[in-house]
Amino acid sequence: MKKREIASLACKIIALLVVIRALGSLAFGVGVLIESFTPGGDLDRAAGSTIAAAVPALFYLIVAALLWSRSGFIARGMIGESESEPINLSLNREDILAIAFAIVGLLIAGQAVKPLLTDFLQFLNATPLQRPKIPSLIGVLVQFGLGLWLLLAPRKLVRVLK
Image (tube, rainbow, N blue to C red; front, top):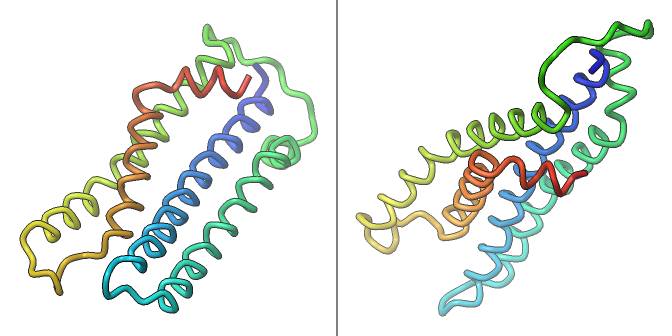
């Protein structure tokens, strides 16, 4: 592999990280909307909160699409215009992607552990008025689940992206 190819793969991996952030934000918005249909729920407030969660998610998705689609251009900027000699690795493209996805999964799952435990323990121990909102818990659960999936099964994603 050449340095530019590795840099391009790095851009695509970062795009995946940004997509996971977007999914967490969307899960929060959906949770707020679902919570509004429970007794005592406020649909007007929920609609505003859902839109407030959807705007960052849309921004994340646009950034991810640009990172993915322009990864070659960004890699040229990172490495330079001159062609570099191939780097002699005993790993192929799929191996590098699987390792990188596992690292991203570890990062995502690790970042979600503290908020997940905090929200869950507050939910169990607090009075109903002090409890954290279910949408917050759902968003963190989605991020944690996606992180675990990337950590434990990165080769499945590599096969999907072929």
